[in-house]
Image (cartoon, rainbow, N blue to C red; front, side):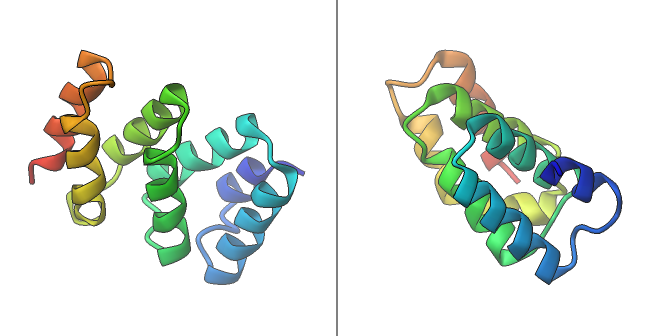
Length: 112
């Protein structure tokens, strides 16, 4: 069963469900599944610390596409939740190796 189905069914964001879903993602080591979960964390504004850490790790990932997925997830979060990512967003915004559009979005999101 896809983690995204559990998320969209309302089973998420109970803390036990968050942990179980993230454990499945880690065990499967599937980029598409991880990307779906990162997106859904943003879309559903999940505030569980483990989910926040998962998105933070995605913002620091070596894959620029995965980092952009995480940026778009943060973009969908409330301003309060987004404030958890200020340091990571500022790092992406200042990284000259990032594409200009990625740096621009990170800079925009880092402003409260």
